[in-house]
Length: 164
Image (cartoon, rainbow, N blue to C red; front, side, top):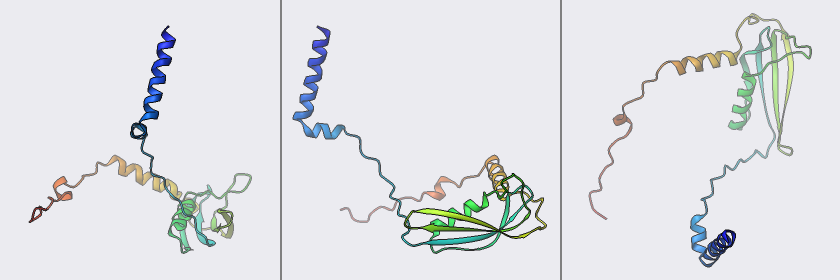
């Protein structure tokens, strides 16, 4: 008997939603906005000359060449600052390397190539760029940031001179 009343209640609810399409639409969740990613339609290339320490960490970017696409530039520059350049056996060479990024618009792949320009340098014992960035971020998080006064940020809304 309990199951019949439950089934009857479900049937009544189903009929109510079928009879009132507006009620059904009102109960639907609003769709979330989608981010539309547009990929470049032309080949892109950028390169960076980086100093690598004895551990294989990139210490700094000495120079480079940007592409015409700002998003690609940010992507590749951020990648090169966090890079480790090591040999297959795990050892590293202190030196200047050229890291080149090429974007293929047909496959949407980014290829990366690394070439040793010269071995040696005075930066062999320097800290990696990624370690420095993390230390700076941690130090900023520890120091309390004084926010500006709310009244300085928000200005009073002007009132209209005539009523609509």
